[in-house]
Amino acid sequence: MTIYIYKLCCKNPDIKEIYIGFTSRPLYKAFYDHKQIYNNPKHKKYNDTLYKFIRNNGTINNWDIVEVERYDKDLSIQEKNKYKNMWIENLHATLHIYNYDCEEQKKKNEKTEINKKSRKEYMKEYQNQLILCESCGEHIKRNYKYKHNKICKGNK
Ligand SMILES: [Zn+2]
Image 1 (tube, protein in one colour):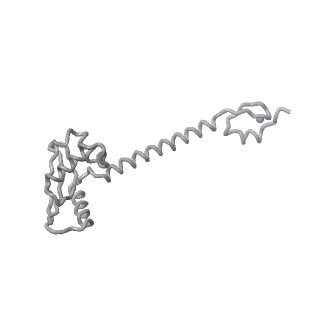
Image 2: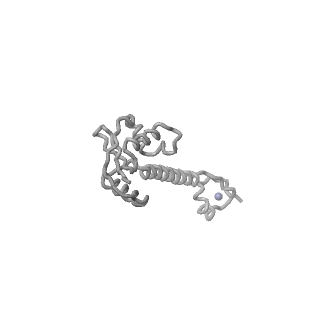
Image 3: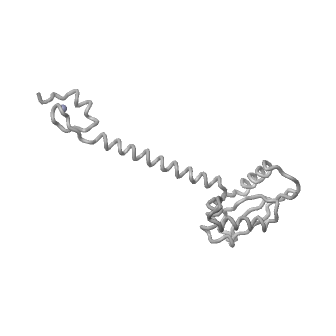
């Protein structure tokens, strides 16, 4: 059996992003499979980095499938992935799920950061609220309450 490692790349030379995949089928068939996913919003891979990127940069008809390497022997799935990852690294392929996850993680982190910030803002506001001292009838900032209690003479 022959295993092909291929790259998907844009016909526009300004777009350097590529995708690396492997298949044991003729490349035009592998390309057809990608096209099916690209065209099917119900497919679970429809929103993968690759397809999103293609949609954001024209259409899949602007893309080519090109053989990178072929292995004329049976490869285990681990070996296939090993070679695929090797080529992802060698050719600096960026259109993989991995990157999508990174993006998502980044967004999540940013969101947490915002929450943290607003919680801090909220606490600051809370501490600066004026409250009534029931002993002397004065209004004091909440974070001075403890200090105030020590010096408060009361109204009696
Ligand atoms: Zn007081």
